[in-house]
Image: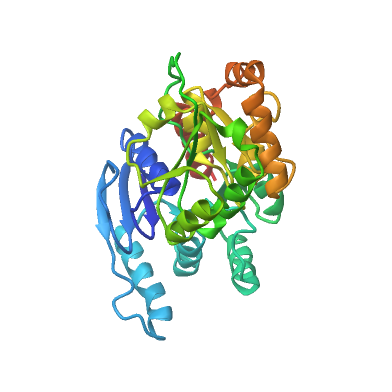
Length: 344
């Protein structure tokens, strides 16, 4: 069988990790091609054929329509049996471009359904998804929202890290993510400012990540008197996970949250805002702590709770079970879906 994976660009994200996994696993038994439209940063080991199709040569009004013909023409030549597309805009482009063509289309969503703020684009997305052969989402909340799609499945992002035997932890509170408004770092800094400085004494606070908000957040941290170290983008997070005692994910919207599983593999106490991803991955008060809402007060309360109670921290880590997220199990879920569509 010929399988085509389609993504706008190969940068650094959860969707790209899934492309890497699927290209590797499907290459064992199928012919695989990965098609991308913009840049390839070569951060992942993509198996099989890799093709760049420039659909944005001229970013003018006519290009909004010509891209569909370019995609359609290429797919007719390549003649795949199944196409797996990644992210909403690419999903829409593929569904429109392949009308009346033979390939089965699997659209995958890596954002929460409510992350798309434009009501017009949300309606276009939702209407388009009615015409795909399957839609893959990351949480039960999103599956419930997309109940109008005829074949909606939950398949998680893969975790490549096996659980590590980490004994000694530092007094380190870590946060990992892009420094963009959706990641909630304003909320996080406000929450830290509510915590008694004596309680935070002895703790290092590190934020790993970069983005448009970095300078603003650094200034905010200084004004609040918070001794936070901004270390920028870190390609290999293993050493930070090994050292960290607590991870805080303050996102305002998160379809999944790969860092929650990565940190869990290194025995880090996980704290999060109540995003769809956190509610899917974590069990509040069992293997993690989830804030009751998205306020600084709610987030500060769970951080304080974790800092004060060593027995709680030990039990939260002891109860972490990552089996359902392991890459080999996720690959099996995808193979099952491919077989299901092949049989239709």
